[in-house]
Image (cartoon, rainbow, N blue to C red; front, top):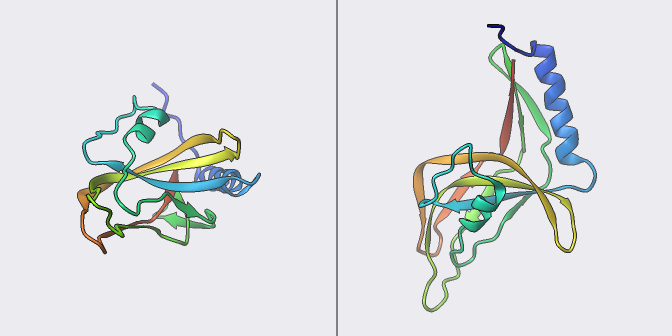
Length: 150
């Protein structure tokens, strides 16, 4: 059986192409939180993530200005990433308070403003441990990245 791979230069070219995709054409990159009760799998589609998006007090999708950095990982992979962390903060609380526990971050790439807005699904970043949003000041950050490997 043949094994397919990209040489290091090919992975770098792919990273440059993805960077141009994310940053071009007026696209908006949105980092979003999904609920801990949702267990992502390769079979899930964008609608599954949106249906399980967090709704805690103060929650808002975080706009990532650009995917503006590329770094070599070891000898065989390149990492495309945003130089700004996605930041999520709980609060101010409503009465009664709306709380959530987040299981991770998913990325939406807005390709047309609409209405309705049109999105492509980006990478998914499960948290190592669930993050609770139940008290004012609870926060989570996530480095948004996309590896390109050989």
